[in-house]
Image 1 (tube, rainbow over the protein chains, first blue to last red):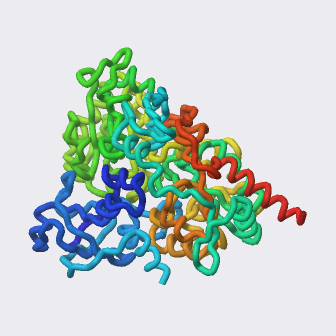
Image 2: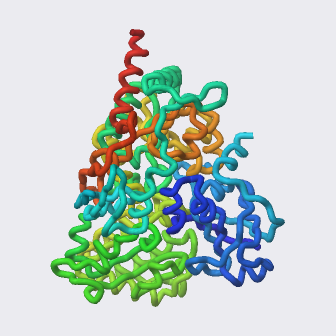
Image 3: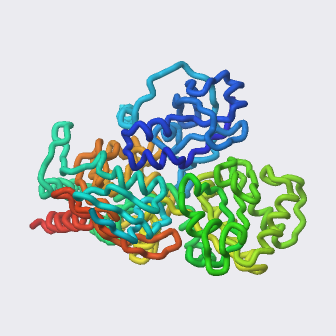
Amino acid sequence: MKAILVTGRSLSQGMGLELGKFSETYYRSGTACEMNPEDMEELGLESGGFVKVTSDGGDVVLRAVEAVEEVPPGIIFIPYGPWVNLIMRSETHGTGMPSYKGIDVEVEAAEAIDIPGAKDLIEFTRR
Amino acid sequence: METVTSVVCPFCGCLCDDLEVTVQDGRVVNIEKGCAYSLTKFLNYHEERLTEPMVKKKGEHVAVGLDEAVERAAQILVKAIYPVLYGWSSTSSEAQCIGIELAEELGGVIDNTSTVCHGPTVEAFQEMGHAGCTLGQVKHRADLVIYWASNPLQSHLRHMSRYTIGAAGRWRKGRDDRTLVVVDVRKTYTARVADYFVQVEPNADYELMSALRMAVMHEEIEQEVVAGVPVEHIEELADLMIGCEFGVLFYGLGLTMSSGKNRNLDAAISMVRDLNSRTKFVMMPMRGHFNVSGANKTLLWQTGYPFAVDFSHGYPRYNPGVTSAVDILYRDESDAALIVSSDPLTNFPREAAESLARDPMIVVDPHRTVTAEMADVVIPSAYVGIECEGTAYRMDGVPLKMRKVVEPPDGCFSDEEILRRILEEVRRLKGGK
């Protein structure tokens, strides 16, 4: 399914910043892909099911959840964090600012995986 | 047990300055008036706390004395040809000033976190100017409040109650005296309590603002729908904006991070300028980190530029897209990094984070972060606004003195003190003494 990805601050993500980048709160917020229930149904996803999000920068597997704050069909919301940054491009088009919002992505149901923690994720990117 | 009053919150750009913090046995035990973020920060800051300077030896962090950590940090920086000094938004302006001095001494680049948040805002403000005001003006006068691509009920939790919709001002007493408009791609919590919610398509803010400008100037819009919004709604919103006595446009990263970026801000500035020919209107970015505004201001008054300042030619140069941290890292040009109170390995896009992780890194931070875990030198500092004082700038540019409520752990100094020592050591090494 084609979708537009918007990243942003959520309450639990912001609290996770202060509880620590290795905290359960930060992990849970950053690994959640918030979706419209219609889109989840179309992909056959239950809440907590695994979903693969692919952009032109790569792909990442997260957990699909019904959006805390309503998103229209065709839009997914993922809180800021190293997980979604795996698929963000560093190209800034001469502005200094990467595009963290309004990104074209492909969303599909995925096999269950053990989603790595923040530190593992960064070490993974070094290899 | 002691209660400290008028404590300034070191979380977001609201810098709420009315907190009451109760301290017992050198530990914060209670907060009054704080939001969920304040509570989380004050009651948990000592968790995941760095307390000892560390240097990486044979791939492992080894605890060392502060002098050795400072010496190693200075050696890395002096050896580098093009170091990046990054972070700066969660520390004091006094520390930021020393950071600028250090960047100049090293011939490196100093960039702050606004480069990945409101960089396009400060860039557009510098190019075009803008109509602004203080939050006090908003509290007392604003009868129309717009949050565009901003969701303060998730990001700036007391903004609405202290300064806008719920604030009891001198001439505007509260919710009944004010109209709330939210423009967003999602129906956020803030949108749910708005009088008017305008759902804009992603990446179409520029189009919507251009249409609004036309409506404000009573020009005909030759479309039925613009950016997903029916034209009659756009005209209704324009009438509301023209009809207010004092309007304010607060906006968030939905404008700076999506298509258009600084051009979205050009459109916003132009729209507010147009509105000022009809009524009184101002605009203000919703700043995130508690002193990101200060990071822009200290750089601006010392170098002429608000972020992404490059000293490699011996004088300050500024060219976002070239001298900005993500671009430098993406091009793999840096050869060392000093990170102050920030965690760019979790905040930057993949290629930039990978590039940064390859550089020798020095981290000065009170918090255990992913970047600190990967750094070659880690120097724990005191939390500004909790364990040490310092100046911070609120989102409206008003400077406030951050208070100290508890002592830092033994051996942890302020960022200002640590950076001063690194600067002195850099000068000593460069002087060959």
